Length: 105
Image (tube, rainbow, N blue to C red):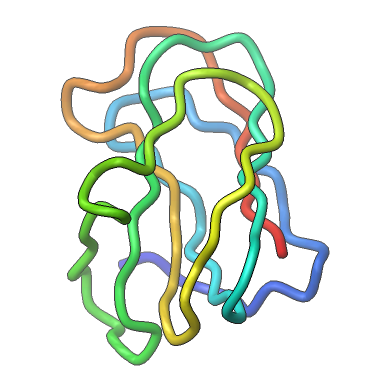
């Protein structure tokens, strides 16, 4: 079970380098947030969400599966309140290397 924290602008950068690797979930306020990605990696990272009050593993792909990332950079996303968010190399989406990932608001 993933733990989560409420983002206060700090967040932590996590290194993801395997299929199924995910970031610690973060609860964000409504509005813009930024997915920060760096490193030398190949694959597709998927943004997932679950209700913040749910302490289970009921993750779903955000934006109908359209919130995916394949390049480094600062990617701005718009998020609703009341959800926890994470990035994951889903099954079949990791190729190689290590992505440094962070979600901040």
